[in-house]
Image (tube, rainbow, N blue to C red; front, side, top):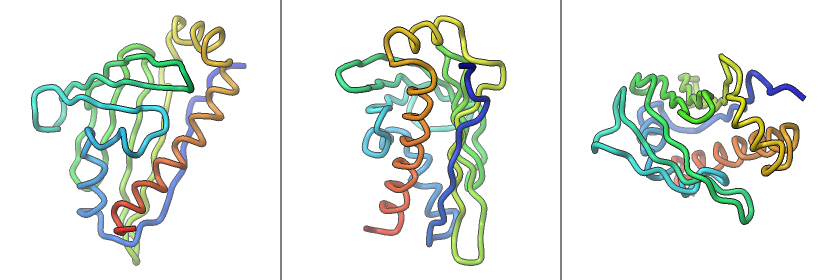
Length: 153
């Protein structure tokens, strides 16, 4: 099956965008929140537009590195990272609500997914459908962990 252009989920967080942003923009903390991206190493210190990261990903016993850079950095609004190896973009959008913040995490493939990534996904990571179902579940788990962290649970 072809790659889904967008995989996303949203969650309501009982905190203002500034509080949510502190957690979302803490890229080195991603390893505590994401079931797939187990570690992010931020290169060059401060997270801002253009910051580069090295990421260690895991699915079961399979471990692989990726590289990304911060494509969009709009404090308290949007953080987006582009993955060098496959061309996908991971975005966190924050929207103020009457009771706090709606946080949406999405993985998009605006130019499709690189052929080498699709080949590896097919033969090593269980196929596109299974892999993308895992991404969907991972996004939902990550959002739940961000919510718990921000709300102090």
